[in-house]
Image 1 (cartoon, rainbow, N blue to C red):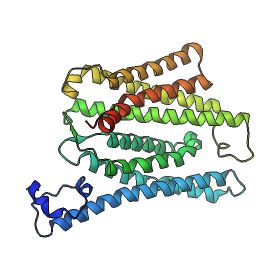
Image 2: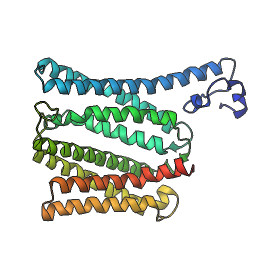
Image 3: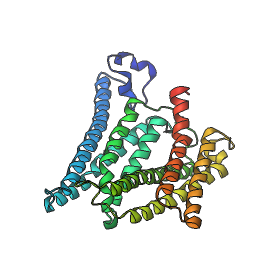
Image 4: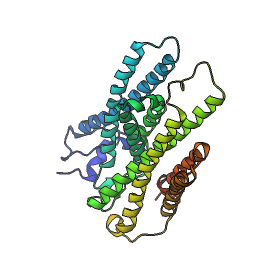
Length: 319
């Protein structure tokens, strides 16, 4: 049984956006209005819980990072940081639940601008959180606080800007593989961009050292640079697979032959930037500021490829 459109006439007292994420598998009866309202409020509380936990854990990491470089640093700080790291899984799970609700709110898969940004930020935060379990990467957890802050904002985007235009052919294995690879490529290259920004701050700190700095516990700059190129290599391979799957299976994945659009153009430009960076690294030993600049240029171009085109279509052109 499904809800008929005319049955919503008695629910005008509730805001329309409360019902964007809820589907009730029965016809309305005397209690159905209350049921929808309760389910909607439960959904909203999940968003708010994820938001608040991201903020709380991010603030906790930021405060403890400062404590580690002060006279207050002791084993207690390290233990509480470990517990906070495990606690980060809770908002990540809640965030995943909200994404599932918003992306599968209707028939098919809804992957508009808000869902795309929220998904990429969630996967970025998850990968960054998971990397904290490896000893040689624990020193890079300085970015947990800003990553948590970005995730706190991203988790609310589908709530305030719902995307209810389902994509076609989402049931096809080729589409699912294309979307998964693209998401992983975006997330890894986002981490690479954040890593490049952190390296910029570290380099400036080396020239202008401070008595107290949250950067004192970071690995050496050369080690960070080596890790940066490892991340870029993996992200570049995934980006290559994304573009190839989009070209080869365009008819099957998108239901139409490959068309030359802004998304396609910026996608290949971004691929070319990262390819040139990796070639320059191998052939000419590019490093330092050159590597950082090329990384950031490639990332910004990649953002314009999908997020930028989605913004123009959905926000500016309302299509």
